[in-house]
Amino acid sequence: DDITGIGNGTDSAMHADVFVKNWVKKQLLITEAANNIDFDEAELQRKILDYRYALMVHEYERYIVNDRLNSEVDEAEVDAYYAENQDQFRLNQNLLKGYFIKIPKDAPRLRQLRRLINQPAKVEDLRSYCYQFADNYNLDDSTWVDLEEVMKNTPLVNDITDKADFLKKTDLSISSDDEFNYYLKIKEYKISGEISPLEFVRDDIVNIIINRRKIKLADQLRDEVYNQAKRNNDFEIYE
Image (cartoon, rainbow, N blue to C red; front, side):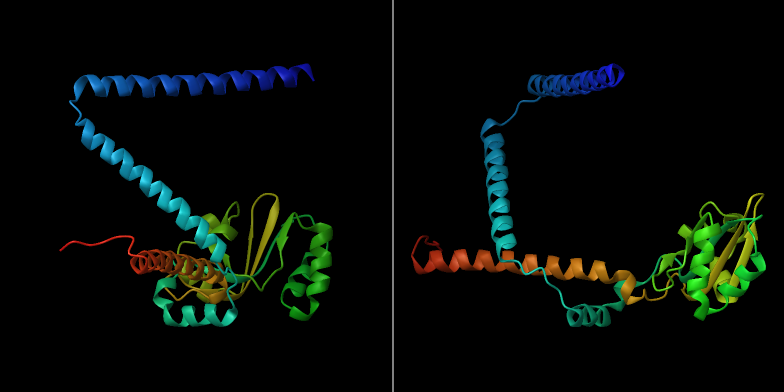
């Protein structure tokens, strides 16, 4: 316990030291600037006020927008945006759906494993086998994954030179290193440059739709404030 306490105290002291040094550097730069530049104080104050007012407006808009925002996005709206803007969703990576299994080379019944991988109806038997013997596995073939992520820390990193060609020509890939066999069963794939599957970009589309709503609400707020002030004769524009 004492060692942990000392460590925490040391860390706190280091953070405090960094904070103090940064504050001193900032003050020295301010002094240096004041000594070397003849500032227009009126212009400086105007900029400070502009920045202050911009912050106030930003905080008020954010408060009102968040209060009024409907963050529920239905599937029809997502589907419509995807259909109308597909060129925005061209892939810059290669995707696949399938199975990935990393298993020790001395695992039992490896021939059975290969048969199970090629029998979709036997997925529960495959899952049971992997649970018992695999070092790592992913049998969720309903989700798109990046080929680069699958290849990490496997012999595929060095074996595959043309990723698009590999996906087009491969059904089941089996590779090995000194300790493990790596099985990659490809059920579907998408090549870089193609239109992304909807499910892969669904969250991005939802965020785009919500951000558009926020912009629209902010514009409506400005119009409301302007029109209300105009009705109340709160301002007058001189030609």
